[in-house]
Image (cartoon, rainbow, N blue to C red; front, top):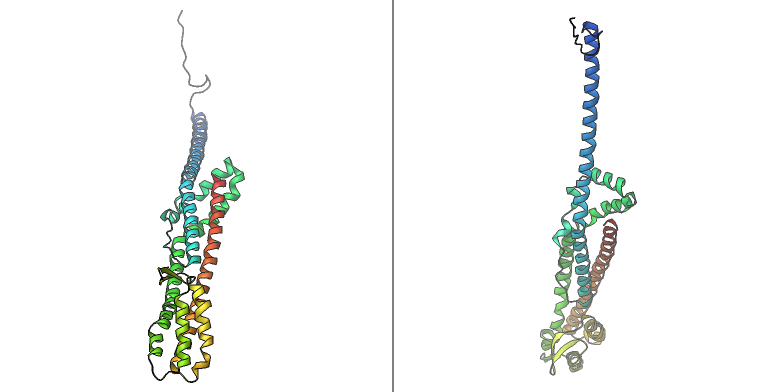
Length: 287
């Protein structure tokens, strides 16, 4: 007995006529399309997830160095403000890392996506960080410009202020040796110079000799301004007395301008210190 073996592709009735072949191709195309779309969809979300993770890793790993730069900036600004208050100006240094703006190096969409998905409570801190980055990202240039402007204005006034030394040297000796000057004026001026040179609150001393200026404030308040006021009775009869009055008033005015410039700068940088303190606190909330 002969047994006939029949082979078929799907079923006995599938003989690959035109209609069946068309159905087969259509089904295969749909299956391939679904598989391809699913694969692309999976790859897209994987890439997006990986990109978000990379952006977050770079951002979070950069924050400690940035926070150190912020804290160093706070300390340097505090030291600078103290030096301004004492009149012994230090040369402030702003860390270069402060200008290394990490926001320019990270995809913010990916970063925000990662934070929103994994730790949504930190979104407000991230948004505040983005606002703060405009402040600290350009601070070094801003600080340099402010300092240069301050120095130029301050040095101009300081040059006028430094002429106070003429009042106890060139201008003084010119009056004392002038035979035509009134003796009362000479005695008054001599007493003023003697009293000035003995003031240990104004000068640092080596032995009995004044060596360097200790207090600009006391110099002006206790000696320069009184000189400008008390010399008035001698101005009418003495051109030199008039010159002393003019010079003393210029020195006093220059000191007031210097004090105003310094006070303004202290106020500006004190606000910056408070701002940087807030920036540091916000960074620590992100870590």
